[in-house]
Image (cartoon, rainbow, N blue to C red):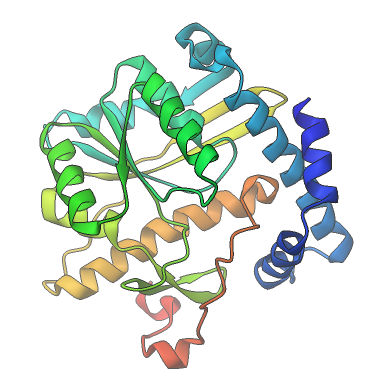
Length: 281
């Protein structure tokens, strides 16, 4: 059913198909030709259809099912991060069936919260709110911002796990960071909260291995820089987190949500006024 739904999504994707193909050309045009990029989009649509089917299946809210269908790689990184009692920040992206990351950890007993931006379709937003609640996940709305920041700090102070998406398009307040050789505005939250609280920031991605089996990959924390300049530290921290995200997407481009308008506000490096990453490396 999920694969059939994915086929329908691809056939009737409308403007999102054009957006996705444009994004693929911008990011991967040097490595994949037009035919290969269309096949990546077809694979993404199949993954999206299966994701919808999985989220609608009550079995995926049972711990026994999740343990048999979602393996965890690198859980020791998270456990080690929580030992200091400052909480942990999992920095993720719209990759694979990413909501299962929340359910897998929430039902396992971790105190997990996520800052989310509600979908425009209200019934979908209500369904996802109820789904996260059943999975034992705390939902923090991104607006108003001061409320979400306050709740996020409280979660970290209680040694909880805060999940943040770093690949959303930022309308205002973002920092321009290189992503697939394009400078795009990037949400500062992961770096700012980590630098302020001392909570480690760990990249984490839910990757579909085959059919209905997944692997949650939790990577080692990105070491925060310490240049003495808060703005520079924030920028370098975001760059490090973004590079980890880009590496995962390059490794399996069929699973990232290319339908997002991530490059809509991309700017050339000379407009940003920063040195190229190579010189910083």
